[in-house]
Image 1 (tube, rainbow, N blue to C red):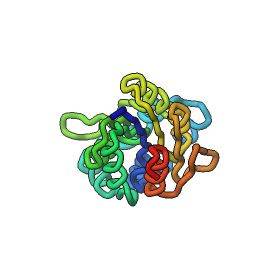
Image 2: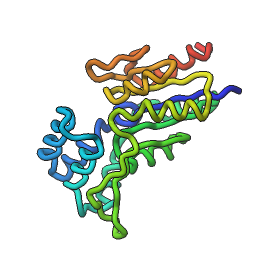
Image 3: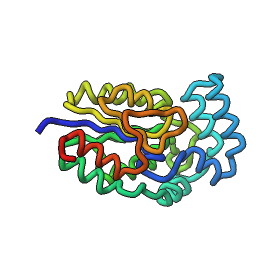
Image 4: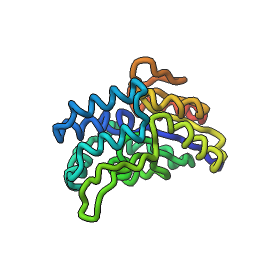
Length: 210
């Protein structure tokens, strides 16, 4: 059976969390400063790795357990497990591409059974405390580059991308078919849906099963 490839954004797409960065800022009482850093990034005053490090520096000394407590609280979107099962049965390689945090992406990828997980990694010291540094595997524009690399490696007959935000647009451009799920204003895909059940229906249609 020919290989197919599908790439998912994580937050707002597969899970109900909208932004781990924002949620952790609110949890730790650092949102006021975090918001300032976000505005600096969107005004083009700092690059993405600098932004990530500035954010993480506000949490320096926080324990891994505190981050994992948040990770465990994040809920899945309805239909996520069913959709992944459906895709695996149809020979899809599944990638999760998130400019959020690896601690959440890794857990979700493991539980859903993704083949590839890309996200940004908070650095912890040997005592399990945040150092204030981030290993930025997925910068704000980086999802298109990652998806292109996977396409070159797998040579799929079909590539689908599913996401909701501005930083998903680069991967939409790399895909044969893009699906925008409850998209932010100004974000458009070949299809616009409100649930993962509708994503499944679109893929059934693409495979001639609908």
